[in-house]
Amino acid sequence: MARMKLPMTGLLLLSLTTLVYAQETAVPAARESDYYPLKKDTVWTFKAPGGSVQMKVTGKEKIGTEDASKIETIVNGKSVATEHVVVREDGIYRVSINGQKPETPVKFFALPPGKETSWEIKTKIQNQDVKGKFVAKEEDVTVPLGKYKARLVEGTDFEIAGMKTTVKYWFAEKVGIVKLSFSIGGQDAVLELEKYEPAK
Image 1: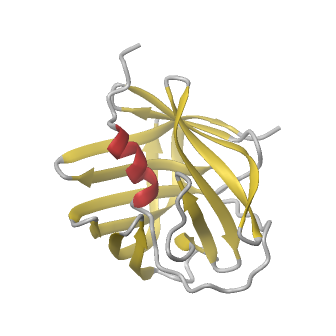
Image 2: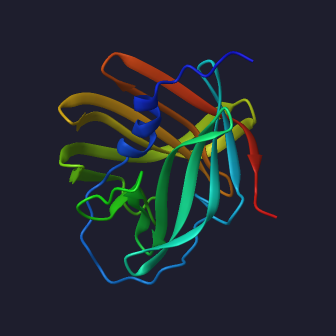
């Protein structure tokens, strides 16, 4: 197998490019969403430039007052990035990225689907500004694993640490992320789902 060529900066952007501003609110933890199954040992394997990338739910950890699902990004058998995710009544949020907390918990998928079709971004992580706008809509998508009716979350005018960025995520019900693409600083990548292993 060819050595994985997706640069580390690109892997970190899988998390950074979905930072969405959200107000702090006291909400219950341990909710679930079929659009991002987060039970322990759920694994997504993506076809990527030069090889494959896995995302695996490895368990829950307390972040602040909430029980957050820890997701590891794995390349060539090694964990190269982590994030902590919680599901709230109005959306799915990242509360930690590679051990760093954003200034506020950040929403990257609106719930229920279709209620919120666009939202603004304004936050910081590691003192770096992240701003822009997401637009969500329904779109069919075909990946190596099959064809899905998906919810596309698209940001075409992002700015991360002063760099212009474009990112697109496709979420399918009962599966989660089935495709993502991004472009930043002349670097482009597309990841497509080729295997999905739900938790047993």
